Length: 355
Image 1 (tube, one colour):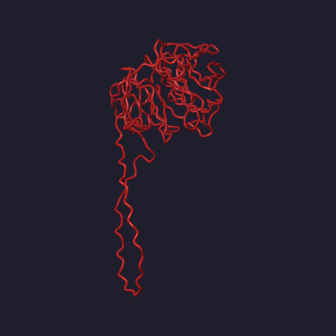
Image 2: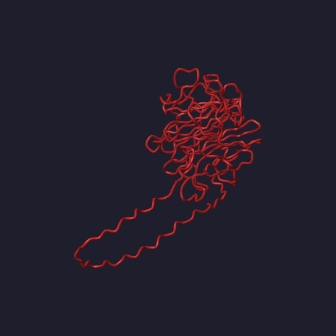
Image 3: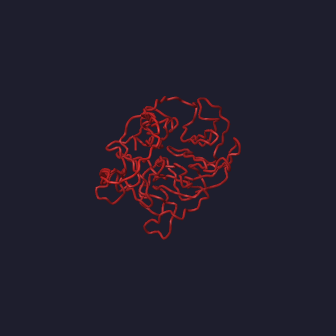
């Protein structure tokens, strides 16, 4: 999408179903029991005068403010960028932005026209169609170690690959430090995926499109057509699922994906959600579960044969090109707090629904 995928635009309603643990809210049943009727007791006692305490007036409760819809403004914060794709904020407020051409830009903040204070060109980037330098995420301990991670389409050892790279920011200087994932992920001019996010589990979550080879999505040996979960040092988390036909966990967390371009986590529950491009119908929002198969290319949208995991939401008989996704929370969001928002590329806007 030309412009930052995370930029706010006109918000249009979309019926996105969200999941909460247990699938429903607890509903109180029954009524409070009536107080017991105590029998009167007849006793003889000497009357004792007790000073009567003056009743303390009950304070008037402060009414709870009713949440309101937030007021949004579509305000460009930076201009003159070359296909900006993703962004991340450091704890000190600096804004890191990727350009698909291969640049990581550092701005002093997310304020309008904040000065650009750093720039790094990732070597060997190959921008072709939908590929190039894409997702970015900062290490959970970034304030101490300066580590950040990007997903990039590169020419390496004579192959066109998607790779997850580890970078290190020292002040406003960035250097390439090494690989998190070097091999196994095909890059292509379409269906490239390449989202990278840090989950509440402090693991890296990476999306890989099918690279236009749809059969790879159903191949448990391939990393394409998958959502990956990896330790920041590149190793396989011990609690990753073991796919059918495999003897041990791999980097694959879920499979049967066409082109996931957004990954986010529900506040409070940590449940992972993914937004995915359909072919001609059924863009999807999926609730990711370990080892689950989401059907592509054998099924799109709900599977009438119930062979695969159904999406939480689809776009029906059209596509809108769902892209980046995030939850919003807090008092500033008013009635929208807890809502899931998804950017979409066809009309370059932002859509959302409460959970």
